[in-house]
Picture 1 (cartoon, rainbow, N blue to C red):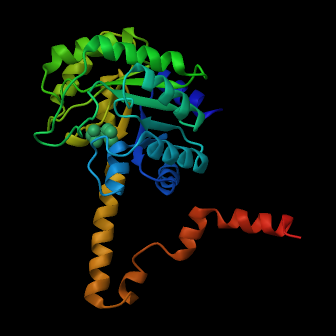
Picture 2: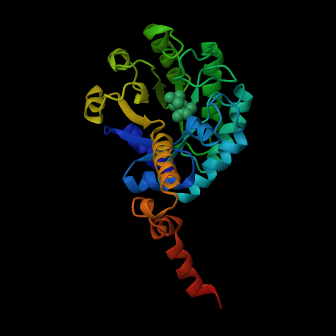
Picture 3: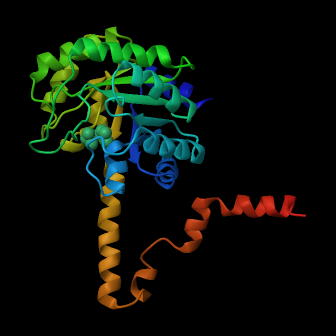
Length: 290
Ligand code: SPV
Ligand code: MG
């Protein structure tokens, strides 16, 4: 099955689908190895990996090429974070065509103005687009896809911009009406209450998507009880794990003035060869190098 069909089937089914952020193909391979249903090609992680703020600084083509490389490294669906769609509805048409051709199974587009600011930054500059304009962008994304299974998820930042539940529900309904296959409702609240309320008041068939970074106490069994949340995105745990791991290992090497102690504590070179597909390359060498 194509990754687009796999993801659409999962979204339409009853089970909870879990995806995790990656910012490079190796992260995508490790997500698949760990048993995740898909990969979140996160704008935050990709920006952080460049040591840059997640504020529309990297170009569409930079992120697109990363998504293409991820999609060629793994068979699990890649859900591309296209931020605000890089402009108006015309930019969205261009963007969706290219992300689909690059092998993404889905795009998530948010209803903020360009350039955006990252959602979880305290005091961040959170400005929403007019609802009608974003409806047009959602409709443009849906019309631009070639494969009918390619998934278009509309994300409302109404709660992030402190507009309250009523506005967030109104926008979610408007985007579902415009043809979105899923509604991502993002929250910066440190408890799950807001999202639980949203889920209880959601009165459309369109499945909900959440990113529980700010309220990590909400576990998968509890999300399953909400019933209309079908997709959970773990938004930045790969990059945070890397920061922790690199800090520890780098500091230890400086402290020890050598690599002898860390050697046993980190992945072996052989393990990295395996992740690179070296065995397949060697097999091909035996067959074809004459
Ligand atoms: C991302 O991972 O890029 C997201 C989620 O969009 S958040 O950073 O919480 O906005
Ligand atoms: Mg993002």
